[in-house]
Image (cartoon, one colour):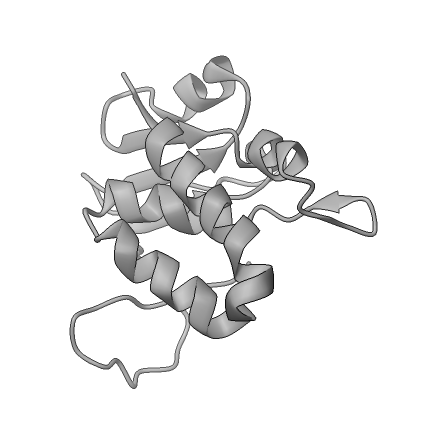
Length: 139
């Protein structure tokens, strides 16, 4: 498990998040092993990397959360974003999160280029753009 705090102001608090507003599930097999919704606040967001709408719908039962799905694995594989056989889904997930949270995609693109550099950043920016366009609210 990992966590991040996101805000308009710099956040200096460095502790475990017990009641998140957002949960991101990078592997759609994880909900079968652990309760990924544990502690999630009512009205919170769930973003799951999956190619199966059924898996995403299982998380949306009860309507307490807004569940979104994107196939970041497919995007990574399509763009050959693979390392040691593993699809790199992180930048696609960033793009999907930007859409869900209404962040400007341009901010994500700039951060990717700043972090990875122009050369490596191009394909990762493309992954973020695709996920931004493809993420869907599951109802």
